[in-house]
Every structure is written in structure tokens, then in C-alpha cells.
Length: 490
Image 1 (tube, helix red, strand yellow):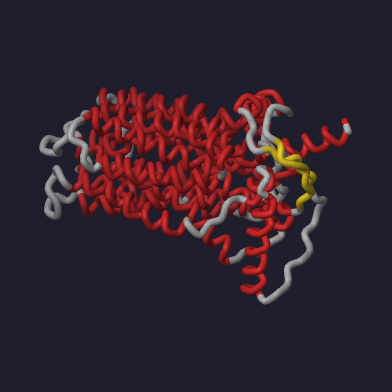
Image 2 (cartoon, helix red, strand yellow):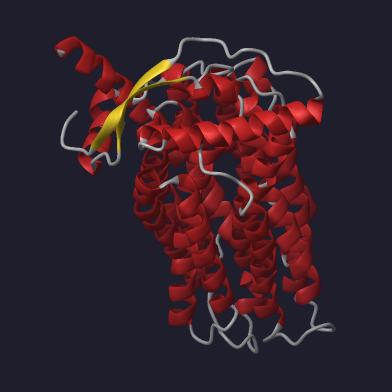
């Protein structure tokens, strides 16, 4: 593969050295510093769902109707898709650490600006840039996490970290429960303060994130092998000091790498769709499936509860808290099974299983069976199952493509899948909820179940047994192939 700056050929054992590390304080810093993005995303997405009912009321200071709430959700997702692509490419080119600092800054500025919204168009603009920052985070963070966490626990750690999105949701809902109470704050102020919760937590994440190093895997490929060796050696010394035991020798064969400073966008796209077409189909199916159902429900749950169950806007966050906690418990309790039972059976079961429960939910809804608590209880069961599978979509894409393309692969499949499912879902749910007709909303739930089930069947067909396997075994780095090609012609 020519056309890129080359800096030399090296032999490295950095991946094996990282994978054989025992769990340590270093890994906890990675989890807190990088995993915090999911808490932020949960705050952002759920915040709009929580305050949406209030923003449609008179006296809110920015009168929106349910359909415009759906439009705002679609704009947020559009920003996230474009931000993922833009920042994802920069992440593969300039490094994980540089970009996960920049994208967090974009998020912080944009979410603070949202609190000052005075008209629908302004609200739409700030939601777009907030989404762009979060989308960029997805690419930078997921690639860095998988490259810094040992292979034997990569699945459960990644899934639980992605599941912390719902801790953010619960925190946002709890905060909104207080802030939307008009006995505490005026109707035109409480929802504005709600957006400040994300900014405050984002500053904390930024401070922790300063102590997370650049990915050694990225460094040695981009001609900075000495820096990679230094970082890994520092981590090893810290771990040995913490455990009081010498580390075992790394296993496996060393990698021979032909270093390159840049890899073209064309080469990256070629890898995804020509070299690994079956994996590309798998990634798209998983993202589209979860994005349609999740975004459709999340962005519109507040208005759905208010319109069809008469839940007061100030009480909507209470339902969100219960639903969000069920979503977090899914990855927390099921995550380890993705490393033991395996990726393929667990992802298949979570997608198809959740689809079955959503169909039951749709029937309950259209027949007016039970009250709001019944509805939220069945919804919680559906998403307890679905949430682990949704988190596994990010894990899957970050594992099955070569390291040089990892961040952009996450961004590409997130952007395409979410653009199809994540934009259409909120728009469809928003419009049908606005109709006030249960039978129309029923079909949106059924469609979401069908899309989830279809993704589960694609996983059953094309899924990859990635559990406990090194990243370099799942997809050989392009630079290794370059080195082998160079040896064959020399």
C-alpha cells in the first residue's frame, strides 16, 4: 500500500505486553477518564427527553411542539453522525488522545450554549454541535478503550462502559426531577439549568482524562515507537509496584510493522467494504437495529407518557430513572457473558429477545392494558435485554477491523447506521405521537422490533467469535501486511 509517508520497519511486542497486564489502577483511569463520555451522552439524550414535555408548554420561554422535539432529536443525531466521520478521520490520523480532548471541549461549549436557547432555530443549532462533539467522542474513545484494555476482559469492560450511558440518563432524569419542579425553579429556567448538569460533569471527565496516555498501538504504527515503549514500560512499572509481583513474559509472536504517518481515506474505505465486506454488513445491521429503536423511544418517551398516559411533565423524569437503571443493569449483569458464552450467541439473543418483548409492549400499548407504570415496567424488560446488545454493536465494529482504520470504522458505521435508524426513528415516533392515535404509534413499536430482530439474524449469520482474542489476531494491522509485502519483494 503506497502513497503514504513511511518511517521505517520495526518489530514490536507492545500489543502482547498490554494484553497480559493484570487489572490495575491504570485500567480504572481508562474506564473513568474515557468511559465518562457515555455518561455525558446519556445526560444529553435523556435530558431532552426529560425536558421535552416542559418545552412544549406555555411559559417555557421556547415553545416547541412534539414534532419539533423529534426534529431536534434528528438534528442532534445528524450532528453526531457528521462529527463522528470528521473527528474519526482525525483520530486515526493525529491520535486518540489529541481528539478525545478536542471533542470533549466541543461538547462542553455546545451544551452550555443550549441552556440559552430562545427560539427553535437556535435550539436546533446548539443541538447539532453538541451531537458533533459526542459523535467525535465515540470514535476516539472506543478505539482508545479497546487498545488499552486486555483482550481477556475487553468484551465485558467495553460493554459495561458503553452501558454507563444509562447512568448518565438516570442522573439527568434525577436532576430534571428537581429542576422541573416549578416550586423550586420557574418554568422558563429549570430546563435551562438541566443542561448545565452535563457541562459540570464534562469538566470532571476532562480533568481525569488528562492522565490517560496515547494508545501505544497507535504510536508505534505512526513512527513513534520509542514513545510507545516508554508508555508501556511506565504502565508495567506501576502495575508491578501495585501488585508487588513481576509480570509474566508476554505470549504470542512479535509483530513486524512498516510504520506510516498517514493512511488515505480511500484505503480505509477499501479495507471496510472490499477486504471485509461481510463484516461491513454486520456492522451496519447492528447499528441500524439499535439506533432506530433506541433513539425513537429515548427522544420521545417524555411526550409519549404525557400524551397517552397523562403523566405531568414534572413527573416524567421519575419514569426515566427507572427505565435508565434497567438499561444499565443489562450490560452490568450480562456483560461478562460476552467474554464467556461468546459474542455471537449473546448478541443474537439480546437483539432477537428484545424484539419479542417490544412486540408484547406494542400490544399492551394499543389495547390500553395497564397504566403508565405497567408500560414502563415492560419497556424496562425490553431494554434490559436490548442494552447489552446495543453496547456490543460498538464493541463489534471496534474489534473486527485493522487498527489503522479502527476509529474511522467506528465513525463510519455509527454514522451510516445511525443516520438511517437514529434519524428516522425519532422523526417517525415524534410524528406518530403528535397524531394522538395509539394504533399509529403501535406500528412504530412493531417496526422497531422488526429492525432489531433482523439485526439479530444478521449477527447469527455473520457474527465473529472475538471473545478473549487479541485485536491483531482478529484483523491483522495493514502495516503488518505492508512489512510482509516489503519482505517478499526485497
